[in-house]
Image (tube, rainbow, N blue to C red; front, side):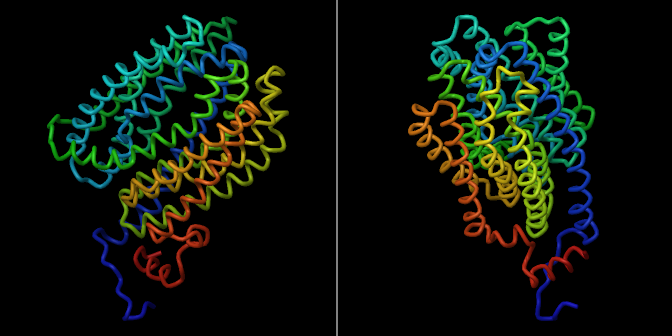
Length: 451
């Protein structure tokens, strides 16, 4: 029994509702999101192997380069809208119709910016590649508006905790791409142009399908309210720096390799990265659910959710990556073929960094659910500086192996810094992440949630 001197906060919702949201929404949402992530992983594994076998190291490197630069521009212009839409919808600041209208207007401006800047940047960045590769890169650039608009309907439904619809939309792009590559394998046709066309087709189908699902789920009106635009942009710009730096931090190695090494070496490195991140489906799923469910819970409930997600992902990543470290060279040769044997060592070097990367994903979305969207930007800013410094020192001497070393050091340092920020900014120490709340606090939470 709790002492009468302890003040137990009054929840704004009923205790049974809070308990149901903490247990039911996380369990159900996590199950469907994890299943979707497994499907996406399976499809991604197949498409990675299929593209590598169809195109070889040279063609695989060209494909990575032409997709990479337009994708970076998408992230630069994203304005943190994906997380802002989830947060605003979850907190019920406005109705879903208002958020949908505001995000559509912002998306139009984003798309225009990406295409205009891309017309200048992409040809310059790929000047060392053939005219065909540069031409395909521009075609891919013009498909990026579909990439943006395929995400926003999914984010609206994610914020409403409709994880089933959210995950269906997410699987459309890899499913279309995988089916197309399967046809190319059956036809034994290896053409870079066809592979790029399949990527574009996936984005178009996802954008159309996502809008159709959203319209079937919600009766939308289209009111444009300035305060909704301001709310989305206010939250979005705070998380934008973290989103962009996180993406660049994960891609800057490939960006620089595309400029300074042969397409073959880039192809070997891409395969090493792909395998090292093979276990990332669980922390990715957990992070998505943590943001959505945490945004619908009071602060202490959200912190309990973050603790559960962090511990689950820590165990999974440590055990899984240790196993993958042993079998990685054999696995790469078996799956991708003998031509990619050189990827094994780089994969092993990247594995410790993939553990840190997965844990950071959970912590970042946890911070956003606690209304601290700027916290991840500090960690990712540090990681970008360390990655660039490491690449400057190691890339000329060790090639793509140097890029692997720099990435792992940066990811690991970023995780340590994130844990420090959790303690200082959120009053959320490492002990609580690993062991749960302190006894007194845990006693209060038990009463609070009737657990």
